[in-house]
Structure formats: structure tokens, C-alpha cells
Image (cartoon, one colour):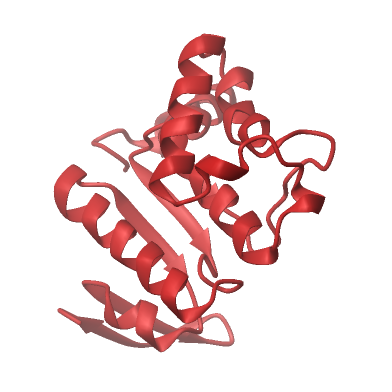
Length: 164
């Protein structure tokens, strides 16, 4: 259940729509379209979900500012550093104001300072807005910033720690 909505009772079409509207995804390898600018990549999932173009652009720009890449809005992914691409990917996940963000190594390509900033942003969004983050990471510092850690090995839960 997400936001009290039982996903198992939805049709495939309903789940797809709910996922597009209420979930954000941070992919380890960005999944940015090389022919689009950074801001176009951030707003694209909203446009596909039929959000008004003006509103999609506004929320894309706000999300890019939140992660510190507003000045890179009109650059294409190939013109960005790995860290900048990572932050654009995070902005894309946040732009639709989701209920939950699924993040695979969200700080993997960031230097320690930017990683700490992004980790602090995720924590702040969790505390202030109730945004849930499910993070897969090998970065101990990211894990320490969370409320709960579930350690897995070979697909099995080995340990669960609360109040980290």
C-alpha cells in the first residue's frame, strides 16, 4: 500500500498511472535522453502523464534548483558531468512531487560534498513533506542518514537496523 492505496487491487493500467503520478525513480545510470536538455528530461515524465506543459516546466525548474543544477537547465546530458547528470536524475524523480522515491545509488556519482547535500535534501523532504525514500546504496554515510537500514545479501535480508 502506498498512501493508503492497495496497489494489488488495481488493474495494470491503474498501477501504471499511479506509478507515473505518485512515484519517482532515480536510476543508477541516469536514463536521460541525450537529445533533450536537462530541463526537458526532468519535465518529460510529467508531460507523458498529461501534466500541463507550463506546470511541468515550472516544477522541473523548481526541482533542478532544489538539487543545485538550475544553471544547467539548457545543457544536454552529454555536456554535463556525471555528478550533474545524477542531480538531474534526482530532480526528475522529485519534480512530480511523488509520495515515494525509489533510488538506486542516488549519490553514486557525486563527490562527498554534493553527496552530503543530496542526502540532507532527501532527509529534509522526508521530515518536512513526508516523502518516503527507498534507497539502495553501498555508501555507509547515506545509510547512516536514514531511519532504517535493511541489509541484504544474495537477495535475502540479513539484518534490519532502526533509528540509524
